[in-house]
Length: 122
Ligand code: AMP
Image 1 (spheres, rainbow, N blue to C red):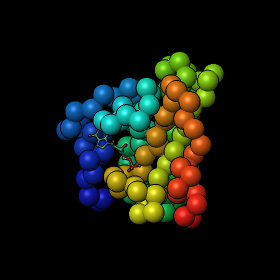
Image 2 (image 1 turned 90 degrees about the vertical axis):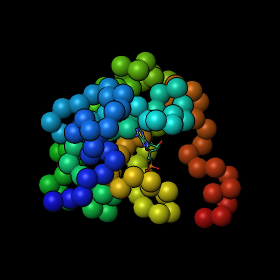
Image 3 (image 1 turned 180 degrees about the horizontal axis):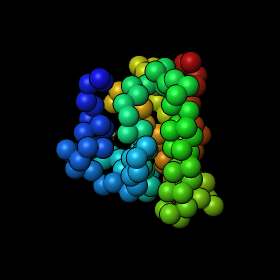
Image 4 (image 1 turned 60 degrees about the vertical axis):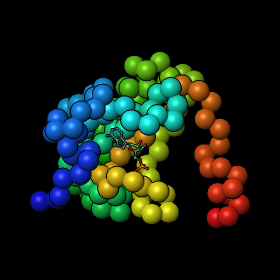
């Protein structure tokens, strides 16, 4: 069994969160430190630490996360203007919580994906 994570405790209802969607496979809740008017995290209910830990058996759940993201973008009123879906993996991407999560960010122009500084140093 995987160790509990901050996010698995949100799934279990042990830690409060502003949950905007939940079913048997995924949970979506508002980011505690939003970077844009809409900033929602969509996570598998099952603990998958990082993208490196994804297996073939996770394909349906991971695909479902995109469908939920599409529906939430529509619900938030940001679908037509556009939004960003982002998944950080590991140290270089500054992944803070070791429970795979998709950021749904939108509601304002988001600029380029990476800052100039990061692109120049990579
Ligand atoms: P990442 O850097 O991709 O691992 O993103 C982790 C995200 O989790 C950050 O955007 C945090 O603001 C967010 N976060 C951390 N703790 C909580 C929490 N208790 N509820 C909601 N979002 C959280």
